[in-house]
Image (tube, rainbow, N blue to C red; front, side, top):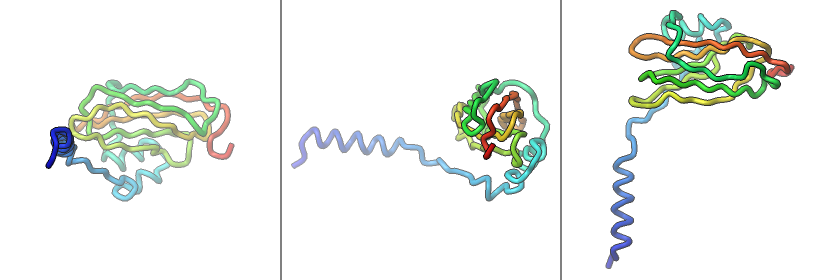
Amino acid sequence: MINRRNFLGLGLGALAVSMAPTTLSAINFRETKPKAWTATKVDVAMQELFGTSTTTEGKVKLKAPDIAENGAVIPVEVSSKLKGSKVAIFQDANPEATVAVFTVPEGGIIDYSIRIKMAKTGKVTAVVEADGKLYSTTKDVKVTIGGCGG
């Protein structure tokens, strides 16, 4: 015989499982867009990833330190109120320009935070793809100690 607590627990558990997202999927951009990961210039990497390197400045917030004491662990935050489908982070201080690419689920909030490596002082660029357009912002980051063996 099942008591009321067990019945309610099973019912709430079944409800939680039924409401779990079922359309989550990840795209491995290293496999689907390999040239974007080997590109040495930001505009070439954007072209490989998005099919264009033309962006509109604005509507994207990029938070990174003005001066990074250690290039091995630079905190970077990207956010936007856009209803975007993809977010990418690039930099021009390392041999490979592409740092990270995120697929934003439908209705998802663009608010990503990662730590990146930069061998030397350079620019970090965040790009959001929304409604078939690219929006970007760039920030200069001065690195005092290199993060790639320097």
